[in-house]
Amino acid sequence: MLKKGMYIRHPKTDIHENDLGVGLVVEDEVENIAKVFFEKKLKTVPVRTDYIAYQILPDAGDAKLFLDNALIIPGADRQPFPAVLEEFLQRFKGGLKGEVYIKGERNYKVASSDIAREYFSKDSFAQKIKDKEWSLLAEQIKKAFTVNLLSKFELIKLVDALKLEQNQIVISNCLYDLLHGDSSLPSRIDKAAFKLKEYELDKWPVITYPLFAVFPEKYMFVKPTLTQAAAENRGFDIQYKSQVNGDTYQRVLFFSQDLQQRLLNDSRDELHPRDMIDVQGFMWCTFANGWTDEEIQMFENKLVD
Image (cartoon, rainbow, N blue to C red):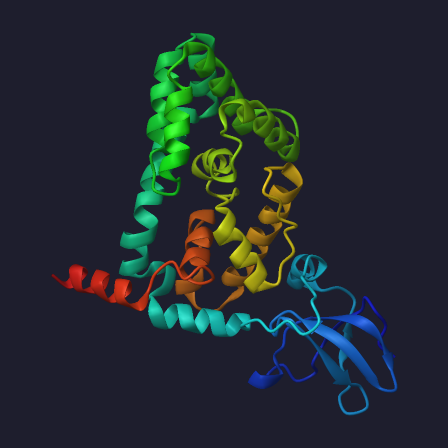
């Protein structure tokens, strides 16, 4: 008898159409029928236990993080993850290791990350604050943020705020605490949003970009439309709020880590992300339709020329 909250798997996962991944039972079995949300199907389906003896799992393994945060909406029909991967590899030759992706999507983010890591490593950043090098920090902050991940409006607001020394002091210290503070990450996010609200800089891209740039191995950049679209398509509940907050960001990290693990678990090396830059790039190239087929073709032609 299947009960709500159990994890199950089809007994014959070696047959392609049966590999639905791990399922979470969302309603108790009644008259040999239970409703189950499968990780790879991304929807709730009825299963008959009198026809198939589903395996009951003691835990969900790698699927636990996803299933514990899944958007289990009755009737929702999302593109299965294996299909997302196939489409990505068909559109981007070589996947995350291919020329189009690396030269068109990854390289400029890595270059920006290298600059941010140089400017804002803990010891270097702390020394500049100790020496009160506010104008230097202002210039470095502006240079580090000059990347096309941010909107022109956000950059203009940042540049305007950094014209005054008193603002340079507040923003520099705020950025240092966000990156290197001792308190928990959610509380540092909340504190940064509160401090930067005065300058109308309490925006998701502004606050999450430095974390992503300085620590690309573990933090994610949040572009609201992209992040919401990716999470919705993957069926992951990030509990998005337009006001920057630490709880939502923690959920975005859960989602990003789950997506990263899904890609790493695939047998194909061209799908293995090197860091969160690749996870963010994959999200942009798939769930947000960041590249049209025409743009990919044009870029491929330029590489040949």
